[in-house]
Image (tube, rainbow, N blue to C red; front, side, top):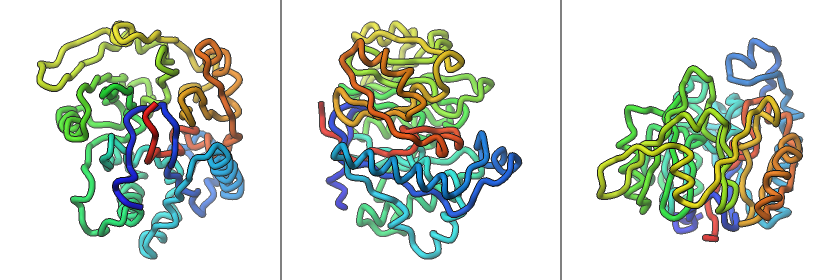
Length: 315
């Protein structure tokens, strides 16, 4: 795959290709193991493999090419990666910003080696020398914390897993990738919310879904060539023509916002999420397809966490 095949400017548009990462070879066999690796429950490899297979089949049934990063591991890296149960959550490791691939930095100790191994596999996928660290930009961010809002805008959370001391470095990476505006939110670490995509997502051009507490979290808006300014969360989206639809996991589903777009008016969510998301999406002319990935959701992520878009048509 050539670097020219990387192209993402928004969360919407037709999804042409996406990176996934098959489950590791180990069970998460006890509650103690689950707690150590950030899982909510135990899960067997067999159940994880079945869910992963359904995810790939569903994506491909909608015309999206899936690339398993496990096919690009070196023998030495495979020995490490096959024990890394969080590797299925490939979203966090890197992101396509425009036509540029940006590597992330793991903040959770259990994932540090996994990120390094994933970046080596990505380098082979992109046809770049594994030892050449210059083939992609890097940022001190886990990319479950980043949304491509379209129209040259990004939203990034600097909370539990992404480094708030390196905001300006990320902004500079965004400028280099061709984006014009970065809005920064800080979810309080005390809430224990791992990433922004467990509290937020775009719902078409007219709305976003967001945990209700986010209305209390002002955004620091950085526009190229202008001094940063503060905007209220709801005001930021209202000024750009989008309603904020508040939700709480207790009355919906913990992964309500963890979905991806297959096309401009088509979302893929887990089977648990879909019944709660459909009434919201229907009001905006958006359909919701579903896939059963409950075994993988035990790792504290869902469909968005399990996918890393490489190419998405503008739309």
